[in-house]
Length: 141
Image 1 (cartoon, rainbow, N blue to C red):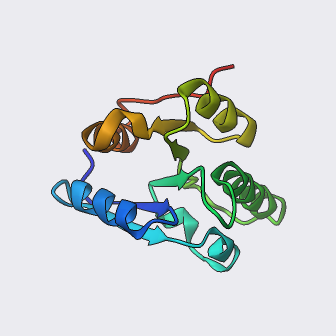
Image 2 (image 1 turned 120 degrees about the vertical axis):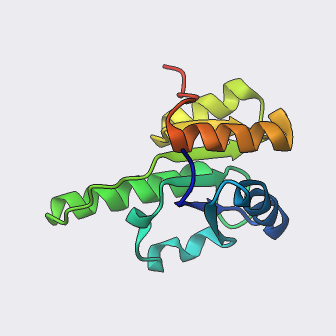
């Protein structure tokens, strides 16, 4: 079930964030957008999200680098002994060729990826799958 869940969408395009928010709204999913990935370091409360979706190709910072920042933040919190039981899956989003996207997700330590080439309905379906655990696109090993 995807109701009452929250996702963070990091994308430089407000239209993408709005479209995802509209597409998931009917399922009761709350979407928060972050258009400038450099603001992530100041953002508190990443543990409140059930999924972190990151666009790969942004002008300020590539999404795979953003994933590395988030993973590093989780590691620092563990070293400092902070209890963060909810580490939301980190999923890259891009229209890159699927093999390249899978490789970038794996290298960044992301939990998976969603291809924009699946179209809007496919993206929404994949996000819902990530939220309810029924569908995962794991980086290839």
